Length: 259
Image 1 (cartoon, helix red, strand yellow):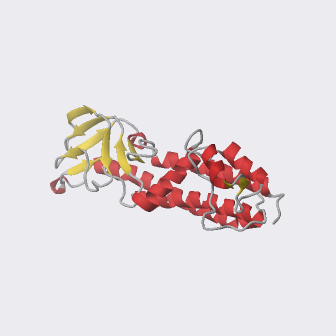
Image 2 (cartoon, one colour):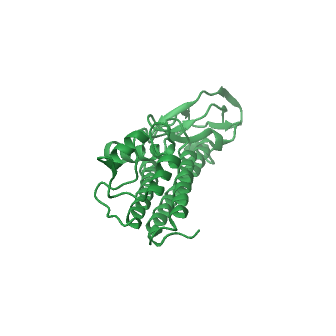
Image 3 (cartoon, helix red, strand yellow):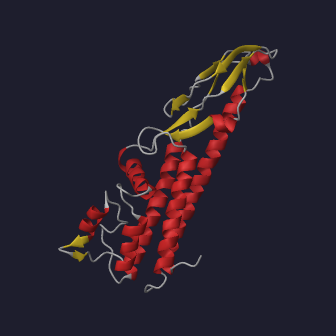
């Protein structure tokens, strides 16, 4: 689509976010493939060792997720600052996309003695952001949660992730293909910190037969806190779509403004 020239930085940030999201998709595929490989019968039984199925997410999953979140969040700031400048105003060290607990708090912060602050877009753009995009904790959408995740990742802790093994039907098999144990397993959670663990243990000479689609069994999800229990790839793609839509709307909305 056609953009304002000063939206170049916005699009570059979005492209970088998409790069990290594709990386997360590959991590998710590799995570499934690793666990599928761990279940298989080994070619040389004499060299079989104890194994564990249901591995933790790769070590850098939270950092890559954090990079995707930060670039999406930064794209919103880039767009807001571009619109402030297009309104003939100057940005300051407090100019940023207006994330607030609610609309009343946003209006309070964006005004000074009843007048709109000097580092804001024009009234039409500001009203569109506050009334349509609603980047608020209360009565808002996942744009605000994107903001919260970015703060968590930058200032407190890495975005938590964990391996999530869905309830499934397994059989532990011996080398001759005889079923040793039939398991209708519960949901198993493997925290990110347990890098070398596997909740389903296999003794030497054993392998695991899974009766379910491994792509639906082995997942990487958000740990405790924001988006807790949600699939990492699915949720970050959903948030990316919301962010892209908001920025497309702002770009179209602002094409008539002074460049």
